[in-house]
Image (tube, rainbow, N blue to C red):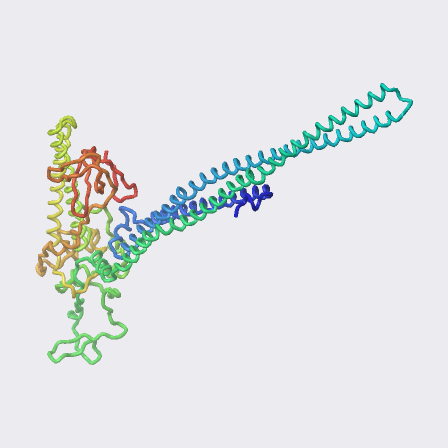
Length: 599
């Protein structure tokens, strides 16, 4: 089955068909291009969506990220970011592996088609020229034959006419002979041209045209096969990212399964508990002692067997217990100490008004006339438990800063040792001043740590022993710890840590060991990976804190060069250390958390 033998006379139709085939391929290329644009736009929108809902640093959302549900949501956002990356991979692969390759292939097809049809047109023009020559020779032979016949007839008439001179007869005879000779020559030419045309025609329809049409057939079949391969690649590109997309979805599922409602409830308790004990019963204040009248059946008291009177409260004049409504005012109130479990200030009328209008996060300044100033350095404006958490958090931050300074000092020390061993790499004296500054910073930070640890020990010494079965308050006293400026100050005492306590004679101090809170604050995670690096030269890593690398080895970067000439890297989860920055080539992930540039 060959186009050359089956379609020998369909030159024009083959030209249209091959042009249509190229247009189909170009249409498919356009489809892939638009699909790649959709994928890249979709990935961009997913990344923007993920970025939009990411937790902002130094914001309220960052504090909310300690809940398991918020952590799961943040994990979902991170996984969606990776999910968007896979759609970017699809777009890139379709552009490079399909669109670019097919575009070059189409150009090659167009050039090959143009060459073949140009050759075919030349062959057609040649056979047409041969045909025209044959027709011209044929017409000339026909014309010469007619002229010879007329010359012969004229000679015969002249020869039969007795009135014609012999010279005229001879002239007519010679003319007839010339015409016959011309006819014979035309006949020979016609025969020669005819043979040549038949040979050319045989070559045209059995050799040249079949060869050209076979090339066109091969070109068309190659186009069809190439389009089939491209369609297969189109599906394979999507299939390659399915496992990674599956991992992203598995990560979302895993984060959803990690949500712990009980743990979040406990986190709420630890975030908002004040450390105060719940209020006790309100003592009855007897105002009838000054009255001199006889107890009767209509009095407000009943006589108990021991002779003491028991108050009887009528329904309409019943005084509802605090903190649901304030007590009726009396002309004069005699202040008496409360029970061991309640501070004096809790029974004052302004405090009752305050409890009725409590809202989380809203100050009671309107009730007490408090002045909202700047937050004290020792957080003495907070309840004891919240103050302890803030102080512990501050101590942890300072310890991290100290560790950071120590790491920088160690790196500079190592760099100084390298400079001393290899003077051509740098001057050891150039880092001496920096080491002095870092040492001073470490001392200042340690002084700060001691100061905050002192406040922390003071607060922990005043906190009551914690009992899991006891009730905990969540923000009830959140607004009572700022300094009062009105007459409420005379009804309560302020402890040195800024929290309100009971009478000093009845205060029970229970020392709480700091280890109770270790689990809440000592879960320091390893440094995240912010990029990769490739070792340009081998490094032995003999000094403490360094790590040996081999030339060409690929490792993870966890801390950039801070200007000291050293970069912190990790080989696996447990093996990490410093290497000279000049020994490696770093590839940072700009989207990685913690990626910074130090100048």
